[in-house]
Image (tube, rainbow, N blue to C red; front, side, top):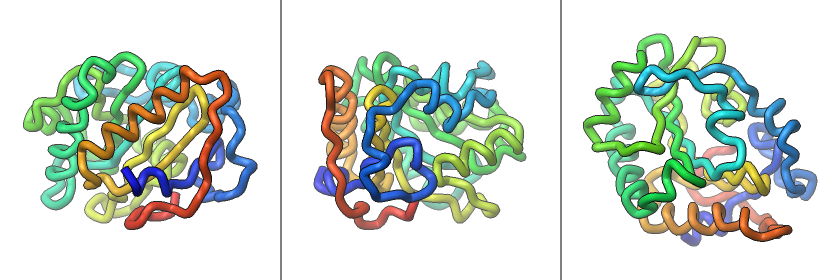
Length: 209
């Protein structure tokens, strides 16, 4: 978990890469909705969601980037995150949600994402998201995951608590045990009336947000 403890805590300045104290206040729900947007996305079952209101609000989110035809990092990362889901158990789908955003929305249909997710025995509470090219490009830019070339997508894993405004990042191949423990710690901040974020340098191996 050491990499997570070195992560930058960010508020609404997630994609801007700020490391200052201005991003450390509790996140206002309306401001968060404006930043993350309520653009429509579609999950692997074909269900349409508003990004912030339906998937993030009131929850802790674990976000990564992938695409169904990926032949390199996506499979080991998804396998690792499947272990994380098993370790978190019933929390996934309740106060914790896992989101995988495609970086290849031009080709990744819900059915293609469903087949990809099925290979890793993904359980409820973990959504693989696609949508229009415009919507996905906007969201990926907000989250620091945009790329013109899918095969060069970010390997960063984002962990955020939409209640407290705490965001951290690490590499997606951090051990499943470390990731799961970090999720528990960040999610449990919601139970505290006034969580105190920790600010320090970015984790090793993570690209700038």
